Image (cartoon, rainbow, N blue to C red):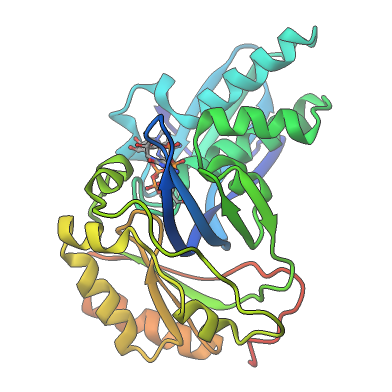
Length: 305
Ligand SMILES: C[C@](O)(CO)[C@H](O)COP(=O)(O)OP(=O)(O)OC[C@H]1O[C@@H](n2ccc(N)nc2=O)[C@H](O)[C@@H]1O
Ligand SMILES: Nc1ncnc2c1ncn2[C@@H]1O[C@H](COP(=O)(O)OP(=O)(O)OP(=O)(O)O)[C@@H](O)[C@H]1O
């Protein structure tokens, strides 16, 4: 694994979008220790990028603002390479030989930050390799590979608003969820997902209930929770500062995503989001601030700019 110039010149590129848990209810625990969740999820229109080219031999290169945070890790532990190897093994079992590839990861999302960067990379790698290799894999086969890579990978394959249940594999698309101007802010403190799950005091919390009929989505979100927020706040108090700073910008809605420490804010329009991004970046130069929009299902009447 080497750090190199970048993603230009690849045969194919794919964005691996940041995942946002708009709400995350922990409703039980399986015998193997994994937690049962009910999560309302959307995705940003920004994230990591992955480049794909056919090559004489397999290779993996990295660039991007957060690439050095992954350099330390064993290259074989990178979810991009795990996804390549699992897909190749799945195809080999079915008599399909998948040739060597050069994969490039432009790591733009902070690592271990609750926005599923590694899971998004794994999902984008699966989808990109299928296209590069020109091989057919049915949806259930792909979901089976995805779940082996991580509980968040099946939802990242979907990449659109959805409700996830089970440990994340039971997915119901939410076509009516709109796009929102959004900020994602991380205090640059890595938070370990298994540690936060272990810190949970209650494993059986009230379920995620969606009100019937036409919804005010912001009011709906306010009635839901992220059950991982209290333990994450206990471990990393700066999450409270991020959340407070976002709320003070006048955002319509603020919450922590996943196991933290990233928080997100939804805004009524792009002007309000851009003004908030300027203020937060100036006052907190060490924080990671991503100005983007969430990807909508169908209806999209929230950005009145
Ligand atoms: C917090 C979330 O990001 C919400 O979407 C996910 O539940 C975590 O998904 P992920 O990072 O892809 O999780 P994995 O890589 O599969 O698991 C990491 C660790 O998190 C814990 N884990 C994860 C998912 C889950 N439903 N219950 C768990 O208890 C387990 O200790 C597991 O060993
Ligand atoms: N391509 C990758 N990008 C990010 N992390 C990776 C990658 N490959 C392996 N990892 C490892 O996976 C762990 C989780 O990283 P990730 O950034 O996906 O966390 P996260 O955003 O908290 O995920 P989630 O929201 O799914 O819990 C890190 O400790 C990191 O070392």
